[in-house]
Structure formats: C-alpha cells, structure tokens
Length: 306
Image (tube, rainbow, N blue to C red; front, side, top):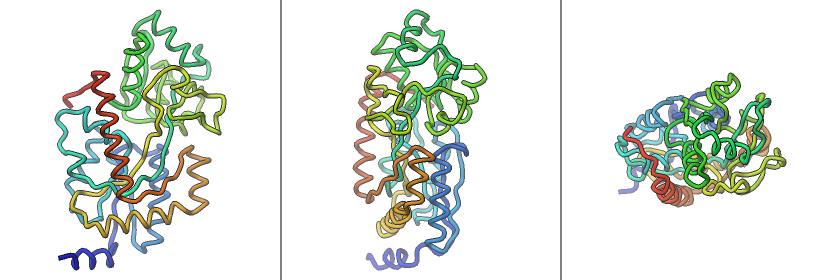
C-alpha cells in the first residue's frame, strides 16, 4: 500500500511547485519565502513560485491551499495567525488542524510597536498614560481583526484600563504608511519595515530585547503579558499529502536554510531567526500555538463572525 507514495516521493518534484503566501508582497515574510523558493528551485531543478493571495485575515490564501490536490505541489507559507483564526473566527471555511499538514517551521520573529519619529510617545508607558486619560483618542493600526496586534490592544484594554481605537489595514506596508501620514498614532507589525522607516520602535514582542535594537524594551517589560513568545512563520501542505513528500520538503528546506548566507540575511536584514524542524516537531508547535491562543482569545473576548 505504501509503494505508490514512495514512488511519488522519489519522483517529487517533477514540475512547478507553488507556495501560496496569504499576505501582501513587500513584507519580511514575502522576502524570506522568495529567497527560500529561489534556492529550493535550484536544489530541485524545478521552478518554485510564490503567489501572494492576501485578504480576509489570511483566509483567502489558506482556502486556495486547503482545496488544492494533496500532492505537494501547492503549499501554504503562513504565520501564527493560522492558529489564532482557529478559535477567533467562528465560520471558517476550513479546519486548520484537520485540513492542513504542518511541514516545517521556517523562522521565528518578533513584532514591533511603533510611532512616528516626531511622536510625543517614547514608550508603552507613555501610550498607556495617554490612553487612560483620553479613552479612545489614540488610533492603533493593525493588519486586521483578531491579529496579534489587535489582541495586544484588547489585552491592554483589559489589564491596563487603557482604551485605544482599533484601525485595521491589509498589511504591514499599509500600516507604516498610515502611521507616517498621521492617519493613526501607533502601529504594530513587521519589525524589519518599522526599523527602516521614519519611525520610532517603542516595544517588541518576544522573550527578550533584540540585539539589533537593545534600547527597545519588550511588552513584558512594559507590563503587558501574553506576548512573550516568538511569532512563527511556517509551511503547510493540504491534508492527505503523502508523508514521504512532506518529509522530503521539510528536509530540503532545512538543508537550504542551513546556508550561512541565507541565515545571515534572515538574521541581519529581516531580524528573523531561521529554524530547523521536522514535520512532527512543527506539528507539536502548531498544536500548542492553537491551544495557547484559544485560551488567550477567550480571555479577551475577541471574536468575529467573518
């Protein structure tokens, strides 16, 4: 019974492989997956293309992969939002735990909270103080309802009695543009974009300060709990993809990511940490992420009927 799958694995890939990214172009994840695709293409001797399919809190692109044939030729590159949506969105057209197979974690990242460089706010404490005395006045941009940044706002509201107005945008570049143009007061998202624009990063998620930004404290240091873990960026395949193919993809990616040149670009240019996991290890990471965010989302009361 296993011989056809083994044969498929030995022959894989023998044609174009498509990686769907459910977010706009220009982000760190977009650049990272394109660098990876280029190197995979050379390793496999077959074209590997990245297709941006943004929209609906990553649902549009995810559905494309869920409905694709389970043969390893259509893959999903996505972030922790996949785990958040599992609890957050009541009417999802898929079940991520049932309809997708984790392949490997690609990298881990920290998110940035930032303001304009001429803003009067130099810290999260400054934001909290103003938000308490002027409820709802501060406009906080995120990449969508239920995103990590949106949950951050709700946690601040609950724990710190500081109310800010949520303004959702489609992606990280749109958020930066909104902050720079004074449409909003504060944004959260892609650390790479934020650190290279006319912006002031005032906090980061994750367990520790960044070596590249040692002066910027973490949200935990500012007393905002629940964001002390890294955000992950990982690869998934449609459920039913032969395990031999899933493992072959994972092994190939780990070989590519062991290239010191690629690792340096991820670390230095994108402020991300490359990771090396088996399908089993990433499955455990994903399940734990789903459970952690489920508890967090229920505690904040955030939900959508999207």
